[in-house]
Structures are given as C-alpha cells and as structure tokens.
Amino acid sequence: MSNLGTLYGLGVGPGDPELITVKAFRVIQESPVIAYPRKRKGSKSYAHRIVEVYIRPEEKEMLGLVFPMTKDQTILDREWNGTVEKVWQKLNEGKDVAFVTEGDPLLYSTFIHMMKLMQKLHPEVEIKTVPGISSFNGSASRLGIALADGDDHVAIVPARDDYEEMKKAIEDHDAVVFIKVAKVIDLMITVLKDLDLLDKASVVTKVTSDEEVIWKVSELEGAELEYLTLMVVRK
Image (tube, rainbow, N blue to C red; front, top):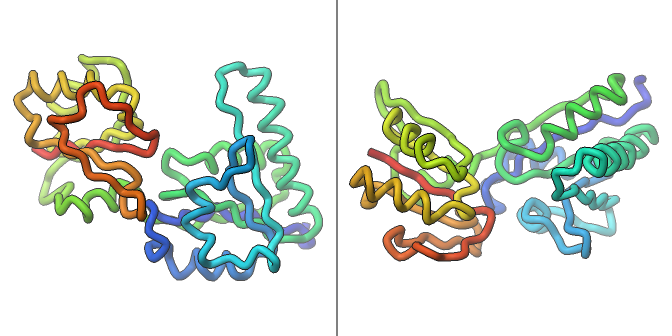
C-alpha cells in the first residue's frame, strides 16, 4: 500500500488561472501525472485550460479522461470503470495523480464519482482533495453581489424544467444561485417576471475567465447559452 500513488482532486477555480490556491499549484508541480476531463475529439477541457499556464507537458504525463454523456447505465458503468482503471494504473505504478476540476472538487464535480468509484474498486488508494473557489464565489465577486449577510438564507440549485420548484426556491431564500441554467433560461425568465424580480437577477457565462460574458437578463429570451452559465437571484 505504501508504494501506491495518491489521488488528488484539485479544485482549480472558476476560470481565472490566478484564482487557483497555492496548495493546488504545489500539488500540480509535485504530481507526475495530471488527469483532466477531455472531449472525445481530444479538445482541452475547461479545467485543463485554466491550469495549462502552470504545466510543462514535457515534464508531466497528461492523462485525458473521457466521461460519457449518456443516461444508458450499461454504457456509463463500462466507461466509468475503464476511466477509473486508467487512473489506477498510474497510482499502482507509485505515481501521484492530480485530477483537475473547475470550481471545487466536492461540489457538483466530476471528481465526486471518480472518488466514490475508486474507493469502491480500490479502497487501498489514498484520496485527498484541495478545495477551490467555486463559480458562485466568482460570480458574487464579478457582479458585486453579496450573497449572504447576517441571517440570510442562500441556496445553490441546479435549474430544471419545473416552474413550481424554481419559483419556490426563489421564494424560500434571500439569494439563489441557479447552475445549469442555459437549458431552461426561458422558463427562469418567466418565473422572474411572475415574481416581479427580473431586475434582481444576473446571468454570467464562464465567470472570471477570459471568455466571461455578463448578460442582460431582459435580453435572454430564446437565447442559446453555453453550459457553464449560471444565474444569481438576490432579493
């Protein structure tokens, strides 16, 4: 067991490379293997782009991992097991593996399933996480919005196609951060209009990155937004 490498889940922040922590930087420098999500065609992931300024590829093993986008459980099990085994092979060689993920590794992150499956298949592996600044923190900073003060209640909610649930989330909290909002932006605008809170909402894509876009909510009906888009509603 002592010869096994350590698996690190590294939160590398919301987009700005300067927002990674000193500890995450150190682990990147010290780990011989850098694992990152990649698309099937080989393009870099968002997390990879955040940290590439800190990596010399010729000095590291770059382990690109493809994660299936399907609800077919058979395919999911097969692909995920294969992905975990690729990481295990490096750990079994005694190499530490740093898995980089945008935001925080234990908050709506691909790393969570990686960690759970590794614990199940190879419980002898030591797993450590390094917390990262989330897109919620980044959005509050860039928008100049205080998410909570005093006894305020804050919620982080995956947006979905359910009018009553989205409406209730806003009604029950002083501030709500809706993630994955791109696919239901029209429904969210309807909810905001019905609550007369359209002017209390902000939408931002790829916050803090050099591709960041801050939108005018009133102009977003029918818009096609990128996946890494969130909405902040602060009453």
